[in-house]
Image (cartoon, rainbow, N blue to C red; front, top):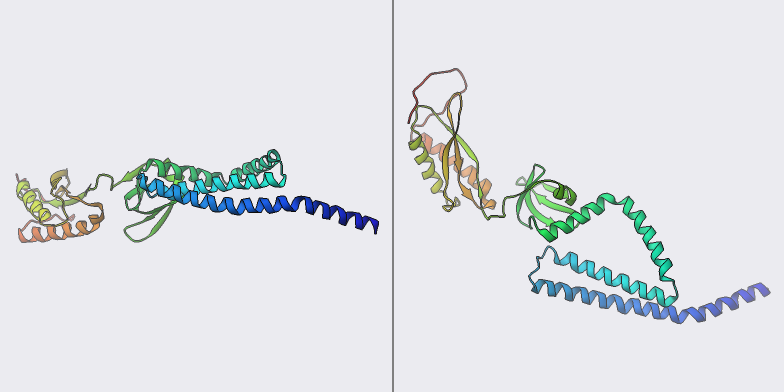
Length: 272
């Protein structure tokens, strides 16, 4: 009975000793977290006024808020009487263990920071990464979200983006299409060139600066392969592709331009 009484007295004494500290620490946490949230929002507004990209602002604001809250937790722990050196040692050991377990995630995190800082692409850009082509829908800390022309969603780890060649089709504001059509050897190239250019220039979404180009790309066994190179805004790529082929085929039909078939070999004249 005496031991129970002594234990109860020790507990009451410790409670009276640490209760004010605990209450003060909780008050510091409550006030500190509110101040940290407001400072993070103010930092975000300041970065937006400074013209920093919108892709970077949420990440930096979140990082600043977390850093401030960690400082508040350290302050509250000190008020309770926790030795910061021991506390930091435990956190360091835990961080090391977590870091080993999440090496891949950390590399994606670091790559995400690189992408947000150096901006090889931005949201709504058309890009190609590791033979994957699509429009950037979202740049996250760990992944880049892309949507293909076929409306498939691609989730690409940021480390894979940094380690590969990124082709940005939207950086210049326009891209050159790479279409191919054929013409017979007996046909006049200047005539066919004029027909194709006339059709390309009649398509509203084909740019006139730079102007479309048509040239001989290759001499095939049955026909001449022509390179048709109009310039378009990236968002219009597929629409103009289908429209250009449709109009060129109709123009060839109207002007009596034949195409070669693979069956058999026939010798013929070469046009100018």
